[in-house]
Image (tube, rainbow, N blue to C red; front, side, top):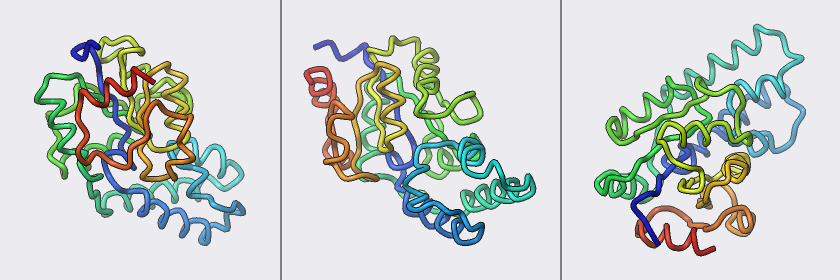
Length: 217
């Protein structure tokens, strides 16, 4: 197995940072405040851009309310904690030190991403950053991952994606990339069949082991 031609593409929330509980809290509060008549709303929208959420679930709300939700989400993101997923920063550091191309591919906007990168001191780690601002269609559409592969000058078949949400996993599948699913958001049994490999986090993860397992499956 040839390792040196691979690229590694990371989602952000639930993959690099353990932010999902914070977002669950934010959207549960929004459900009550804005009387959203949908059960399990936080789970349903995972992996979607804020723009897509507003267009799909708030299209009949006044524009003023939609703008208010956008501002509330932005304010929330600037104050929330960004604890890293166990082992994530170490693994990314190993990839960078070994010279592998690395991309960050997220449904978040650039303002939040800049804040996270600054707090975690990851300014020089990513060779490509694809945020919601750079794409026209969000996950599960594959545009974001295909754009990252283009940035890195890699074929999709040489890209390994790390994802946690169903929308993100589907985007990676449609992009024809290898997939590692993290069971940080969904139970591992629900991820089987949606990825080449399922892991709980990055603790003890080795580069060659990941590559060999995803290309063997």
